[in-house]
Length: 303
Image (cartoon, rainbow, N blue to C red):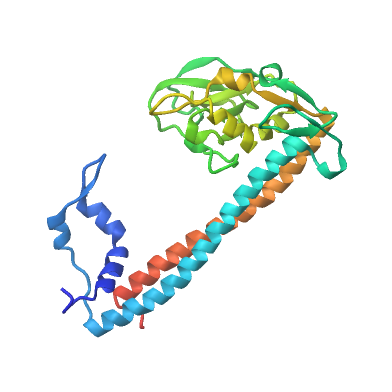
């Protein structure tokens, strides 16, 4: 009713109560629906119409400024992630200081030119896949799921014991885990302890190269795109392990593998810290926006 309620004020009133509305007025589990009759009786503070307009106009201006900052921070995060992917791909296929090197044609379309002194092998000749399985129902044992590998290229994990008893993969410290489900192909982690992990990981063991170089090679965006082309299945597409094991792998001299890995460790740590800082700023801004809207539409902040 526009005679008693300004539309934009109603919008902000609902916006600041979304959590409350979600908790009390939605029903169902899979597809939750808003109970219309209950929602119609939801109460909101209603100041005079001219005051509603002032509040809405004030919030429009403030929220526009906040949203611009949020968009800017999100662009920075996206840009850093793209830079990180490109940096890893460049280093594991071209080495460090590529301008001062001689190159040769690898004759592999997704790899292209490589340093002249590098060798080419297949993954199956530099790594094996762990095949041990075990029933997992020990209450205090640690478990790594795909969801525990947080964010793109982030090796931080959380331990988790809340999952259904099922056949899980045995995971040993130092195993390199590669998510084989299509949405998780970029989720790669070096297991920090003996534990169990999701059977949706491929577990690389018995490496005949520097383990951290192998880890970064799996994060090469061109490698991931190539693996993605082998995924099969309609509902939950998975990577084909035989296909992966027959993919080409670049083998620089061992000391160069270590140099590349150490360089990427330092650069990626800096990028991750920047992204973490930007993410914290985003969280703070979103919380501030929520609080600002709430204080304004409930009359706690003077406009």
